[in-house]
Amino acid sequence: MRKSAAVAVVFLAVSGVALGQSLNCSQCHSDPQALAAAGQAIGKTFTKTQVNAMIIHLEGCPTHMDLTCISCHADIDRFPHPQETHLANPCVACHPDVAKQMNHSVHRDPLGGTSYVLQCWDCHGAHHIYPANDPRSPMYPYNVSGVCLKCHNQQKYLNGVHGQGVELAGLTAAATCISCHGYHTIKSVKAVGSRTSRRQISFTCGTCHAKIAEEYRKSVHGAALMATDNPDVPTCVDCHQAHQTADPRSPKFRAESPRLCGKCHANAKLMKKYGISTDVFQTYVTDFHGTTAELFEDVTPDQPFNQAVCYDCHGYHDVSRVTGVGKKKIEENLLRRCRRCHPGATTKFLGAWTGHFIPSPTKYPWIYYVKLFYRVAIPSIIGFFLLFIATDVYRSYRRRHRGGGGAS
Image 1: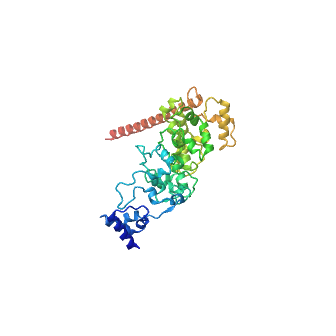
Image 2 (image 1 turned 90 degrees about the vertical axis):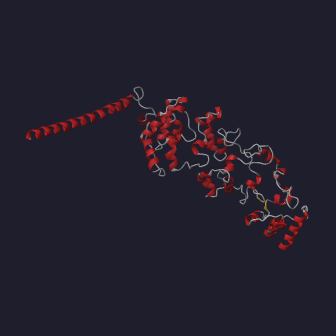
Image 3 (image 1 turned 90 degrees about the horizontal axis):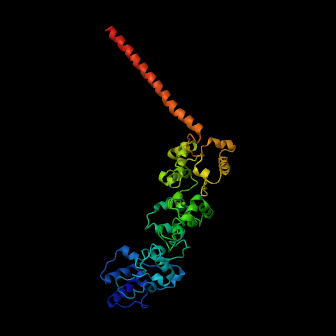
């Protein structure tokens, strides 16, 4: 059989016969010896790797199995095959709607044709095409990252909670690249209508995290984004990262969260824009809760700790304003949160807290003057005793010196 196929190939090479229905493509493309003979017939020597790449075993989606080779390879109708064939994408003949979507995506043909930056078969395969819900498909959830990461250097996705959920746990419901970026209509982050743009990202994340996304859009951060496209407020990916999304339940995330909030709330220029003091962050990291959190972050970030961090008091996604709601309402909310760790707390308990204000002559004056007293008294006392010791040492030295001089 192989010998006869090789003879047929040589005959076709010499005569330049049109293929059509007279010769099944598989006579060559399923037989390594036939391919090698075909190469020799036109003066080429194929390597083993090249031959293996040309071996085709059709399988996959029944819809595509009904097509013949020349349904897609219409320009390869004779042997030797014409040069520079297959410049156009044959998929668009059956999928014109997808072709239109592709030319509105980042993978579009710069000239508006069908020579896309990323062709259909780069994602879906060429001859082994399966439905996206088939585990053998490159577009099946735990295969998607392998396709996208061939071009995009975002390996950190595999270290995130979503990537580990898909890759390690085999969770097909966990977010993959196409869950967030889409399929054929992938747009730049800055493009209008992009699924990953600042305005849209909460809706994209909300596909899986609906309740959280809704809470965020009602919060002080989300409401500002929805109302005015405020460029300064954080979105989902500012706190949770887009690709290397950490597990927010982990001790490490909890320990690092004050610095996460501090990226904005310790930024003097940004806070001045909104009339918010950076003392909010500074007073936290210097009090008992903040000092402990800082210590855990530096020494044992993976160990759990029970000290309050920013979101324990202000909430996670439903962060509200602390102005305009009244002192009584603030105290009620704060006491409820304090009682999570201090069950016996009363309204007097709140008097021990300075509310992120640095004490001054007008704000918490007793604390201010006590601190001022110690700031003056301690250096003065230490300085007095150092001076006393110094003069005593000097006096002893002089006494010994005089005594020595007299003896000589």
